[in-house]
Every structure is written in structure tokens, then in C-alpha cells.
Image (cartoon, rainbow over all chains, first blue to last red):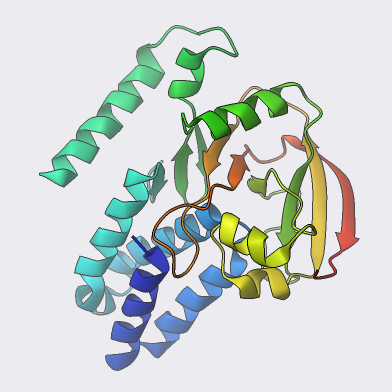
Amino acid sequence: MDLYKTIDKIKQTLTDNNFGTIAKKISSCVEQGSTGSEILMIVGHYLLQLKEVSPKAYSFIQKDVEEFISECNKIGLFPGKK
Amino acid sequence: MRKVFYLLVLFLFSNTLIAQPAAPKDSVLSISIKQVSTPYGFAIQSLSPSAIEVRKQVLKGNKTLYRLGTNGKSAPPEKAQFWSAEDPRIDSADYARKYGIPLENVIHADYLVEAVLNDTTDFITREAPPAPGQTTSAGGIEVVVPPGSLRIMNTIVYKKQ
């Protein structure tokens, strides 16, 4: 699965629903990473935080976020888990 | 159903980590349950032959690890936990593909850090995820380390190839 496609889809949904600032923050998360796993972990962690920080924004993307996290888990990455 | 499966896997991993007696440092048993925690969550050891091979090289203590960084964006090298086993200067585009990152992250990088592990007790090796536009990993092996476990050898201005 192309997880960057999922990230783009999430960003587009947020932008379409007037959450462009959050979409930009996701782009910033992608720019921070030096390896693919680092990027997925940073993005996944941020997306999960939205559940508490911006429940309305999260409601638009919940399904895609859950799919994203599930795909991360399949490849041994567990964003948001301690 | 899938969620239940992953939760079960997670549960088994957690219990194994708690209940498992210490295994010999370099055994398959010990690497099969290894994980490294980061501020964003945790990542687990891959059991693929290439990941195991890189793990063996790192355990020998002289394997150079690499990390590209962008000023004002990337985690500082001394706190960074995600490293690559290959030198990005050899082929930038191929590096981006192999390490699952957008090419822009390589093109815009300001510096390259070279380091070796000081403490080989807790680290993992794993395939990088697929790059943008790809659905499978191109096989770059990442080394994920606890913070502060590396000795920085060089920090150099990164010139794109």
C-alpha cells in the first residue's frame, strides 16, 4: 500500500473541510523525517493526537487514519503506542 | 477482525517482553522480540535476512550509520533515533526510494551525519517502508536506536549528487 497516498488523501479531506492548517502541519511532519519509518511514526502520532486536539477535524478523516495506523502496524510500526 | 488480530499480536509481544528470560545477546530469540520506543510510538525488529545481516554488522561495533538533516526541521543528531545503513551520497534518488522518503527530503537536506553505535544493547534494524508512489519496500535497512546511544563521527554539509 502507498501510505503517502493515504497521507495525501487525509490532507485533501482536511483542506476541503476548512482544516488547511492541520493539513499543512501534516506536510511539515513529512518534511521532518530522515527515513520512511520516522516519517510514518511522526505523521501517525500527530494524526492520533487529533482525536483529542481537534475531534471535528478527526471525524472527517477517522476512517483513513485508522487504515493508515493499521498499515503501519503491519510493517512493525506502532505510532501512538508506548 | 483485523484489529483484534493486531491487538493480540501486540499483547503477545508485550507479554513476551515482560516474561521472557534474558536471551543470549545475538540470538534469533532475542532479536525476534526487540523493540525501540520513540516519542511517537515504538518500532519492532524485522526478521528479514537483510535486516538481520545489517544487525550483525552493527553488533560488530564498526558500522557507520547515516542520517540526512534539514536545519529547523529534523531532530538534532544527538536526539535522532532513525538512521540508515547506507550513504545517501552514492545516489540521492535511489536513496530516497530505498529509504521510503520523498525525494524533496533528500534534495532539501542541509547536512549529513555519520555515527556509530556506542551501546549495542538496544537497537533494531528494519526495512524502510515504501517510498511515495510505491507499494512495496525498496529494501533500505533502517537502524532505530535509543536516544543518546550513538557517537557522532562527522557532520558535514550535504551536497546532492
